[in-house]
Each structure stands twice: as C-alpha cells, then as structure tokens.
Image (tube, rainbow, N blue to C red; front, side, top):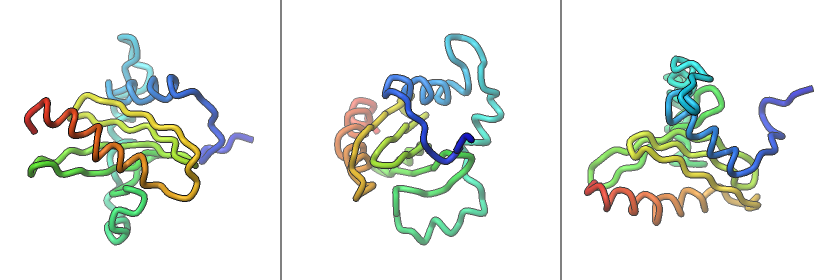
Length: 134
C-alpha cells in the first residue's frame, strides 16, 4: 500500500530535481513531464485555508494545496513568495519562483520545524535579495 502522506525515501539530489521541475512549470530537460496546469494548481493555496492565518507562522505555513505549502517573506517591502514540500525531521523542497531558485534541506531535527526557515531567512534570501537589490 502506498502512503501518499509520507515514507518517500529519496536523495537531496532527487529532491532538487523535483523542485527544479516545479520551478520550470513541469518541464524537465526540455520535456513537459507534469502539466503546467497541475503545477500551478498544486502550488497555489486553497482559499479555504484561512485557518492557517491564525497559526502565526506555525511551521512556516501560509496556505496549502496538493502536497505543497505556501509561504510569504517580506524584504524591504518586497513580497517574496515560495511554495514548499516538507517532511518529517526537516526535509524540505523550497521553490522560490521570483528568485528562480530551489533550496533543499535535509535533517534529523524532530523537535523543531524552524531551523530551515531561519537559515533561509537569515542567509539564503539575503544572498539573493542583496545581489538583486531587493
């Protein structure tokens, strides 16, 4: 029996491949392997997820769709949105379309969801936004 909610065992390199495919609207090596409509639909939050607004950044979630969470960062008044898949212990595929970037985290931190988001916000995003004058 396949469990769609967990149990996926892949390498960080394969996680990047998934992220890059979604970043490129379903295209991998110039071939459309996932429909662009599915990528858009699965990476856009359902409007009915307003209950997440009360979580005050719990798990970094701002919305949810088909296995992808959404999040919004604000840097110097500029909104930078991303969508991500998260796994137990700190496994994340983070796709940031505005920066044409995919970030992957792996880990064994089963007591806190925050470290990858803190690293992203403190180190990764400034490296891009400072270079792009955002």
